[in-house]
Image 1 (cartoon, rainbow, N blue to C red):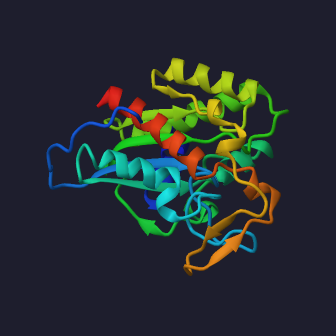
Image 2 (image 1 turned 90 degrees about the vertical axis):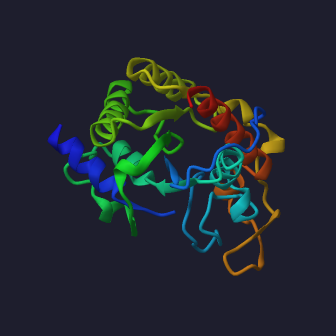
Length: 245
């Protein structure tokens, strides 16, 4: 547990950045923080084939699922703020069987801005696409369990949620469902949104941090959810969160 706490403290001390909408309500004055732990669908740095620091394949920052989720939450309370952290290295190190909680610190994840772990009211685990299909189920289950238990040990009052994967993969989905049930946290299905109208495509245009238009040429980017897919994911997460608030 000491190793788990070390990892989670490192994880949460650093960060990168539905259909049942309710009327705008109270203003609590204090920020209500929501954290999403994810991969490139959540947030991705700029590189040769991607130009904006937001969820990969969204046409603009405000159209990725985190910012669409934040917009919906703000209709409940204007003080909601959503943060996204890309911890795809967690998936990679799990694949390589080198997932040593004692070594996974903020350096390996490239976090940059300090935040207070205990301030988060909501934490959404949004991982899985990069986990290889051949991994032993027991190894995957243990990794998810340790991640969740570590989060709980650092922030026991946070409301936890976990999503399935966007790219349909039966064995991953079943593992995540099993973990959600055993840990007693809400499971959010999103692979039902995997359809042509919700996926980007080669040649489509997106904006970058510089405000310029760029054209998708990378197959990996093109496989990510487009604005409509991001909206569907945001709505599904929002609807599930609302059931627990």
